[in-house]
Image 1 (tube, helix red, strand yellow):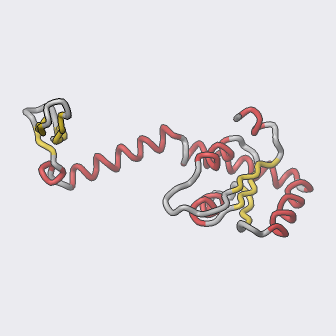
Image 2 (cartoon, rainbow, N blue to C red; image 1 turned 90 degrees about the vertical axis):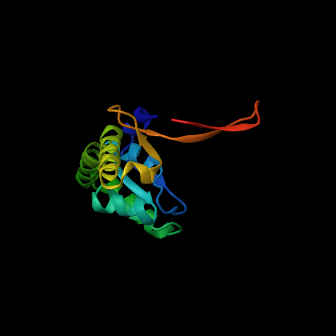
Image 3 (cartoon, rainbow, N blue to C red; image 1 turned 180 degrees about the horizontal axis):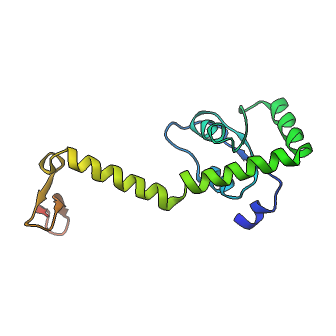
Length: 148
């Protein structure tokens, strides 16, 4: 799929509805292609495209705006290229999975430093670090056991 997207001049990313806290991965894949985007979107997805100047945002249902945006980009190759470069740059710097995962791990580690392990249901075992204590139900025995 990335190879097909990369040969396009303009990538259309239709997101019919905004789901708070969720941005479809197809937006990041489109940004990675290095092509100008036309995002039919609202909410966080629209904000990402606008903030990073990765493309043009059109509100869902705005067919006149969509037509105008596509025609403008079709007629202006230097603007398309500029948006594509900015989209790719943002995808690499901000939305690469390894970068995102590293940030998330850092965030979780910071939170663990602030909150005591016992409040999270964690027990420390010697110097091996925290371990999660869980209750497991053994269906074959019909009993609950506690494990660390």
